[in-house]
Every structure is written in C-alpha cells, then in structure tokens.
Length: 281
Image 1: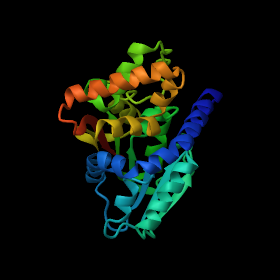
Image 2 (image 1 turned 90 degrees about the vertical axis):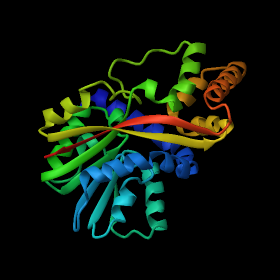
Image 3 (image 1 turned 120 degrees about the vertical axis):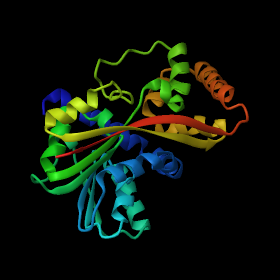
Image 4 (image 1 turned 45 degrees about the horizontal axis):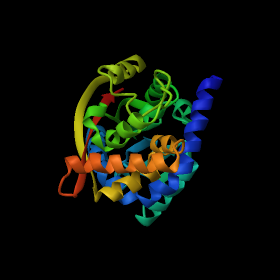
C-alpha cells in the first residue's frame, strides 16, 4: 500500500484502540442494536458443517461469535486492525466457551491468508472505514474458495439513521467543522446507490443481492443515549473536543431536545437503517 493508505489505516487503528473501552462498556446495547444485521449476514452466507469462516472488522466479536456457535462450523477467524478490540472479542469468545475461534490482527487490504482459504466471509460495518475499499474487496475475493459467499453491512443514507444525525446535525449547526475529503472513511461512505455493487463486480463477484435491514438503538432514556454516543462515536467526541464547556452544554441540550421531540414519551428506541450486500465467488 502507498503511504496515504498506510496513514489512514494507522489513524483508524489508533481511533478504535482508543474507543475500545467504550465499546466494551456498551457491548450489550450495541450488540442488541446490531443483532438484526448480524442475522441477515449469517442468513446470506449460510454457514455449513465443517465450514471455515473469515470475519473481517470483528470489533468486539459479532457476528463471528454467533457463527462459531452454529452446529458443525469448523472454525471462525476474527480479524481487525485494532488489537484492543480483538482482546474484547477473545474475552467474549471465552465467556461463551467457544473453542473453534481464533483472532488475527491484520489489515483487510493485506490479508495474511492463502488464496481460497475460506468457505465464507462476513463483515459487519467495516467497509466504510477501509483505506482502499476496492483493494479490500479484491482481497476478500482472493481468500474465498470458488463458490464461496460473502456478506457485508453498511449504513444506509443519513436520513434513515436518526441515531447518528440527531447528534451530528446539532454539532454541524453550532460548529464550523472542516469538511472531510471526498471518499474519506466515514459512516455514510458506502450508501451511494450502486457503489457497493460496483466494488463487488470489479473484484469478480456474481449473484450480488442488496437488502435493507432496519433496526433500533434502544437505550431507554435520552441521557443514556447522550452518554453512549460520547463513549463510542469517535466523530462526535472529536468534534466536541474542539468546543468549550459552554458550547458543549448547548449542544447537549439541543441534542436531548432533538431526540425528545421525536420520542415524546421519553422511551428512546431510535430508528436506524442498514444495507446488507451478499455475493458469490
């Protein structure tokens, strides 16, 4: 990889390592939030007896842990650029007494596996952060066996993801943040129509299917939502770090009002929308 891609990778690694304690703290909430997405990925790759599965951008372990627990699955290899996140994933695997799972710290753009090593590949919410999405897709294709399936989830358009925009819209209204370069890693990098299909086709994949998978971030109370977003969402923390105390308080009050306007009863279960893509080698 060129130096620019290496710099992006290193920045991503640093960020995920930094926020790993927050993801560990909120693991139960986030895993419940992402469960329908993981289920859709598993349905798409259809793990079978004696299958060897590669899970990319595993984070704290899902959907790798659920796949490893399926009857007869031979092995699941969890990968991530963040060693700190994988440490949590391994702890979660041990808590579930899974002995058919292993972890490898690596970059998806340079997978340390031989050609045609895996029967299927899963990847939940990793694509939007890859340094080079086409290179990553090519690598996934390379390590898949002929006929093998892959499935990945990305976030749908901002208008369908109030759980993010409820906060970021207020931050953008109150602060002049530099606009990220076009195509830079970010939450909504992969939501443009046809983009993921083109990446998969260019790598050689066929039988590409796209489906929308809705879910809800159920945090119970609006204050819980604010606390969680400040402990797991790197862009929000980065933006607020540039604001003084008064501005931070103003943003918080406006975000809480923004959420409560939509969820007037105070029970906060915020709508979200994802896109799951599956394909075959």
